[in-house]
Picture 1 (cartoon, one colour):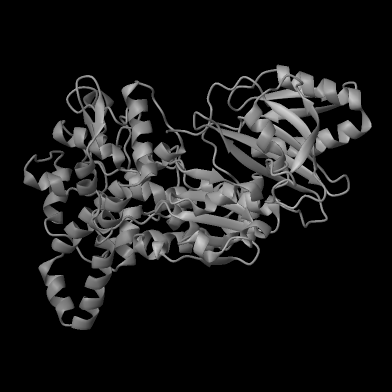
Picture 2: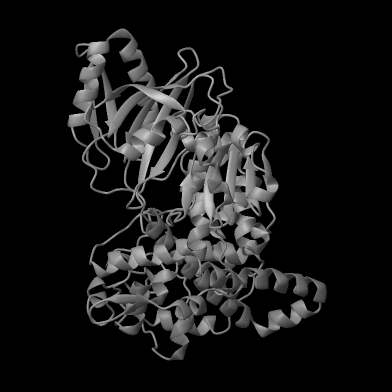
Length: 593
């Protein structure tokens, strides 16, 4: 089924109309003569006049007035109509209790913030300048659609005012406070309930949102659906369910439906069966399943921790919290992509084997879901077509992989330090067994950060553009007196060496070259080392430069900076002679500032 968003959209909107409800209509009753059920409302005015989509014209009044509206204030909400080719057509509706009418825009563009801002402008323009209103609609209808990230300006009131149609970036994540849907979801639903809905969606449950306020109802369910990115909900999706369509609630397949409270009250529990229900008014979440418990414990822990830091939630932070969870779960899908002569395929068994052990049980179930299967199909199509892609999900996946590699290097570094501690010092420490045990526990806790056992996802580590990466030293410049790379003393990173024998050829990540390859190339090339006798190498702790590097700070934190390393005197002597041996000790080089 793939993406539910239509790609080749030519117009900003397809249809505009104003709807008035049928007074005295009892929803669900047949006419007195046994004919079809009368419509929920009638269309008073529309544009363009030649619009003839019978399915839209017939069902639109029911979506404009899905139930008897209880609010005395203006409500702006959205609904979705699924076309015959499984694409979503969006409806943006504004109900004014003073006029008891609803103004509706139908479009293929999911620009919620743009069209929800447009509706009050149309209402005011129609009231003050009816002729100018029709002119505005005609110009907007015929101007086409701006490019991604671009905008289109339409003037009205004789050029004195204008409205800007801003097209969102293709992979832009919802942000606070810019995104209307996320604002309401964040304000009316607690993090615990958000996690419950997220887990239910990953299990493809039958999920109901309910509220007495249509704006709150449609916004919450749209925001929850956006948290599923980069996957797409492949089942029934109805943000606002009209009374006439309540039979959908008995469907045996997964669905995500927003049901006005007045409609839900007419359906019995027996008719609903086993469903997950979130009440957006009372913040009550009900589920017969234990989907949150079925999620990997570490994923749930990270979600709770990051969502509790409310002071950090401005911008797209909340969206990235849920994106981070999916990066941990499915971000390694490329490890299971197999290359053939004419195409690429996905190996399910290889994917499970490549994942950390604590994620495998959940991923084994997840691979049976339609949302995951469609995600893999879409990504393979992009790879097979030769199209490059670097959306937010791919960028975060690369960043997360870099973080795990860094933790792997920390693991090796600390293990070497622990193994090479001077025996005399070890003997002295043994006289204090309790202190030694605490120290070992601290080191072991840090060593356990190896990526095979731990996939923690820290929000502060987000750096999709790798802006915080430490640059390699320039050729010919010494690195003493400032932060050093992890290169051995005296070796400079020759860029030419990486382009031949040590080149990075990764068809899955064509724009990503691991930073450690420069280190590998420099060491394996065994380049001659320039004389270094004039360089002063600190041999005592109190002669360390004031600005220590991250590795030394890591040692100091766990009390390991006081332990000399075996063979350190020999290494210093070797460095002083200006030569470096290429024996097996080369793999244990570690440099400090």
